[in-house]
Structures are given as C-alpha cells and as structure tokens.
Length: 532
Image (cartoon, rainbow, N blue to C red; front, side, top):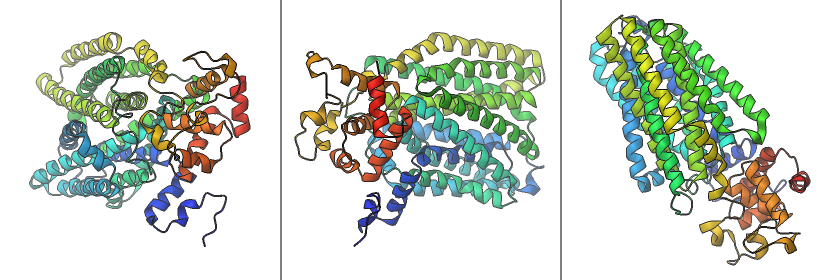
C-alpha cells in the first residue's frame, strides 16, 4: 500500500497513470511556471537559427553569400505564416492535435531534423539549395504547432502574468543562446536541434492542456467589442510587421555569415536586458500594472530604429537596434494576444493562429520589400531615408487611429465583463460531483451581509471578493478555487468539486497566493476584509 506524504503523493498511487504523466505532475507541483517559461526554448531556437552561424558549417561560413540566412528565414517564416493561418481555420483538427502529446512531440522532432538539414545543406554549396529551402519550409511548418501549443497555455493566464512569463522566457532564451554559440561545432548544432523538442517537453506538465483554452469559453459568442478589438489588433500587427520587416531587410545585404555571432550576441543580450527590466518592473508594480503602458514605448523604440537604420547604411548599430526593437515588438504582440485569448470567448487557436500568422506574414512581406528597395536604390541613402520616414508615418498613424494605448487600456479594464467568480457557465454541472450544486458552491463569498443583498446585486462581502479577484487578475479557474478557498474548504474538497487533480488544485492555490501577495488562507481572508 503506497503511503501518501501530505496528500500530495495521491497522483502516484494510481498504477494506471503513465510515468511521463506522473513526472509532468511532479514538475507542475514543484515549478508550475515551467510550462510558460518553456516558451524560451522556442525563442532560443529562433535566435540561434537566424542570429548566429551555429547552423553553418565552419568551412562554409566565409563562402556563403550574405543573403543565405535571409533566404532560409523567409522560407521558414512564410511556411510558418501559412501553417498558422490554415490551422486557425481547421480548429477542430488542430484542437485534437494540440491535445495529443505524442503528435506534438513528433512534430517537434521534425523541426529538429529540419534544423540538422539546414546545417548539412550549408556544406553542400549550390547543390544544397534544395535541401536548404526544404529544411526551412519544414521548420516553419513544424514550429507552427509549437507556437499554437504555447498559445493555448498562455491563454489561461491574465495579462500581467502573461507579460512576466513572456519576459522571463526571453531572458531564459538569451541564456540558452549564449550556451549554444559557445559550444563547439557540431555540438552547438545538435543542441539547437533539440530546442523545439525541449519546448514541447516543457508543455507536457500541463495536464489540462487538451481540455482548457482551446475551443473558447463554453461555446459563447464573442462580444462585438471583443471582435472589434481583435480585428484592430490584427490590422496593427500586420502593418507593424511589414514596417519592421522592411527595416530589417535594409541590413541583410551587409551581413556577413561569419560575423553573425558577434552581431547576434549584441542583439540577443540587448533583448534579454530589456526583458529582464520589464520582468522586474512588472513584478514591482504588482496588480497595478497595465499592459497598455508597454505600447507607446515599444512603438517609439521601433520608430527610432527605423529612422536610424538608413543613416548608418543598414549596418552595425542601425541593424542591431532595429532587430532589438523588433524583438520587443514581438514580445508585446504575444502579450496582447494572450490577453485577448484569456479575457474573451474567442478560441485561443484562432487568436494565436491569426495573430501570429499576421505577424509572420507581414514580416516576410516587409523583409522582401526591404531587399528589393535596397537592390533598387543601392547605396543612395537619401532614398532609404525617405522610405524610412514614410514607414514611421504609417506606424504612427496606425498606432493612433487603429490601435492606441487608450483602447488597449479600456479593453483591459473590461476583462471582468466576460468572466467572474463563480461564473462556471457550461462547466457548472460537471463541477458539482453530486449533480446539483448548492447555494454555497454556486454563489461565492455570500457569508455575511446577506441582508444587504438586493435582487441581481452582490452583497458587500461578495463585492469585496469580486474586487480582489478582479484587481489581482485571477483566471476563471482560479476564481472558482478562490471561491471555495475563502470558505475554508480543504484542497481535497476543492479538487473533487472542480473535477481536477489534487496537485492542480494546489497549484491554483499557490497562484492565487502569489497574485494576491499573501502566504496563507488567513491572510487572504484578511485581504478581503480590508477591501473597500
């Protein structure tokens, strides 16, 4: 008979569970953020692949033309965009794919094999062009599944948490990048090929991946304001991506493959430093952080990088600055997409498929346009300056008229309109193991102040519970746990009532304590009592 230690070994008592599942639950218990920070494996793969020469044979680094990496990037990004758009349209099939750990792991292995193919093609000269293009296309197709897998996971966390975990992922990716470029050839290549697999492996700790955040919230139709905001976001993402892509295309003809490690190290270190500052800032601001505050600073950085690039001929500081600005732009877009998927009834596959697809497609189109502009105007910097000013003008127009910080802020503050404590929706019947939920289970925080309740209006204590949950950004599932937690329910009772595992319930409670900045149930109740 297996003896439980503190009840948290319950998951290991079942002989029907597979070892990988039990291992995933253990990791989730000890480090619940691992599946979110694992996003850094994917971004490290991007940075190593396209901001270093790790995937180029040493004896071919000085012989390859400067646009070799650019061609691979364009083919891969175009394939990524097309795959994301397609997967967002066939959501039922995509949902089944996202829920299959085996299928997603096989796709990650394809991405790793294609990464090796990129390395091999560099040593074949002109004869390796077909293999190079094929490998680039396969990496784009395969990593589209990785992107959506993380999109489903990030759709479960509120805006502030998404920003912190995305920033932490970028810092983690920065560390991995420097490990990869520091390894000898071909060890660095093999290490890089394993990064997509590591990214998928980090998501195996999410036991509820196949059940949550994929098909939208209980089949609800998104509100008109949500659809409007999402459409505006897609337009802004597409325009910004084209503008940034053009600027990045300016520097490609000047980039030597052999020097990519030095230039890439500056870009990645700068991006990691900014992400670290963002992580610390958001952590210090606590619940008062507003994602809309990121918007204009990043727009300013991108605009400045666009104006600087032609002044220095698209090389050195100009090229590196625009790439850092682009990475900050990607970070912001991922956070906004996470917010839309989390706060609305739009399916996360649709949100990240269209959003990330629009970004990849826009960047590809802009990059190709930038290459053509440089080819047409050569070294005539004045013409490139005029083009840069025009792009900055388009950037500012979109940032003011299509998607501005006021609209983002107002939409963020409207999150509770589509979710709230005790809003079980379609899951209410399933969450009540007895088949009929009593009033205490359905209505949160109703103890006390019962005489103050008016029809369809919460009492004072319940209003304070709602205010705490809203201010601290608790997710819908965390609000269900919060409801039972403040009633003094045990972890076992919460797990059984919500039809989740003991470890998952414990993880939700830990997240609640972190977000509300308390360390015990007593402190949580005291926090509610102090709420105005």
